[in-house]
Image 1 (tube, rainbow, N blue to C red):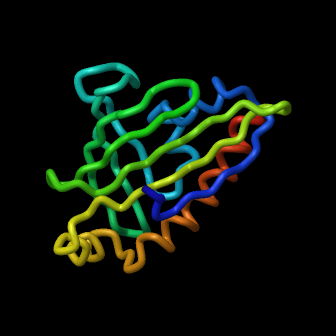
Image 2: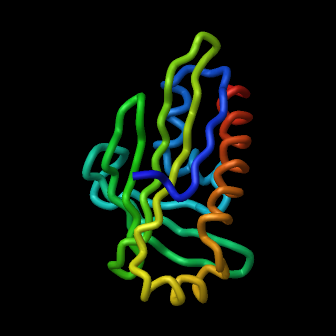
Length: 151
């Protein structure tokens, strides 16, 4: 299934360095556009099946989510997001080794039921989630590149 938003960037860092950043809740909050931080639930770190409570911010709006890690390897970190028990999205970071480091592709799929979308527009202030997520992904990948290459 084609993602609703996706972009990639080449990073002069090891795939492990990038994985460590995107799979660390603090590291991810330092580069992601809307994700402001989170806390592991019942575990101390990422693994398939691990859950975390996330906090997202856009302007003055703040909303919590609960995510479950579905993929956790040096090649892919991905998680399914729920809000108020409803499916919201899937986020995925694919990390491919290159001669000069790695290529990272960030993708997202909108999982919201159609009737739930107007409610999330009120909560987040975002009318066109695909367009906003595309811009957010580009900004996030640029920050991720800076963070990974500065280490």
